[in-house]
Image (tube, rainbow over all chains, first blue to last red; front, side, top):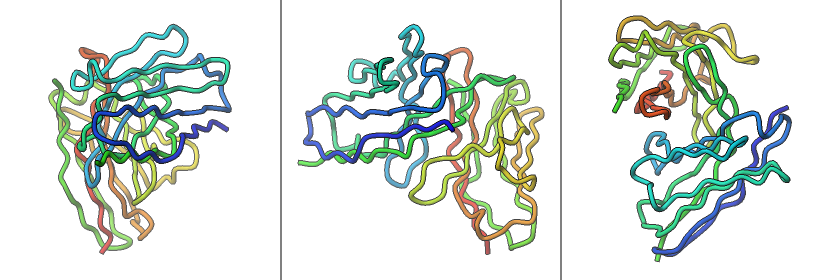
Length: 121
Length: 108
């Protein structure tokens, strides 16, 4: 079965960087786009960006431009999300999700368990 | 950019039917998916392409989408359905997903 397993919780100081991993299994890694979504405490889902695994194309939400980098390692079927120059309002749970193309557009059929990132001095 | 609007909360008694709406401009022309998120858990896909259910999702979950409104309908609501529900579409103009703000379903 498809699984997305993310790395563990992180605590970072303001200005630092964080890199979260999302190890996939149960499907052909290069066949799908992977999307990253975050959720601040008590808030809704916020799209951050996506990466097309087969060609490395990316699309980042404007608010993260210049701070966010999405990458993949096809040898280990793992995706990575790196966010730089962290601020306190970056404290959130970060999710990876697998994109599937439906009749009306992409949707997310499998999600990682989430990684809590806390930014605090 | 495209905006999806959901009511912040919906309450329903056990055994009754819950309807959660999602509004957006010409939403009926897009494919809507719905996600259930229970406290402390990752979102789970419950409907895609407006009304299709992934394997393992009960038939009690159904959906419709027409005009400017999509609706997630949960029949015979049980305590285990209490969760936040998010609607989602793909914004083809920006080539990115858009989520609604989420609706908290409370089972009375």
